[in-house]
Length: 212
Image 1: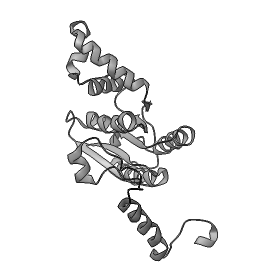
Image 2 (image 1 turned 135 degrees about the vertical axis):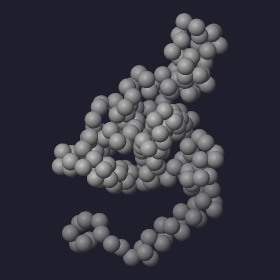
Image 3 (image 1 turned 120 degrees about the vertical axis):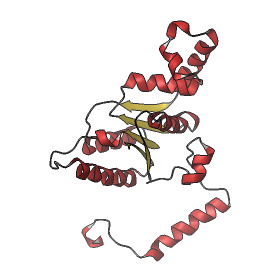
Image 4 (image 1 turned 90 degrees about the horizontal axis):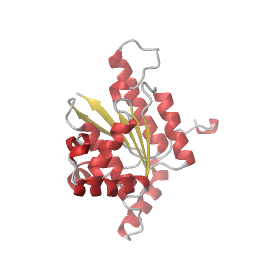
């Protein structure tokens, strides 16, 4: 196992010093800040956004999955000054940007569709939101039908070139199959496993949106 150069088993006692050191850092306020979702109750529920974790946001169509995912990624990239990547297999880049403006500006999304009716205060909020987005390391890829190898390649590329603190994939059911599996349920299962493996490889939290 280990003699072949590949990661294999190790004794738990080898991991123990790292765990104890991390606990000591927290005790002495030396630990890096926890990655927050921006939602206090959600942070308490899931224990913050942990490295190498996969967080699934599931709901029925139109239930607000994308807005919640966007809000979390935006918080990391804009408030937390991190790097966020959104792989959107459903919405286009312009629609995602409009939703981000609405979220950051505190504007009703429906008002964003009524440009001629917007009041000056709303335009001011849009300007502030646009400024936040311009200064954020927030990246989008809306290429349809991306497969897991393509998503992995894109995530590793941005991590290597810029850095990466959080990845969001919207949504699970639209990730392209590799062509070797005809049963869609089996394919989604394999994609889910690949997503979890990717989160561990990247060392960052991965938000995966899913339809119920």
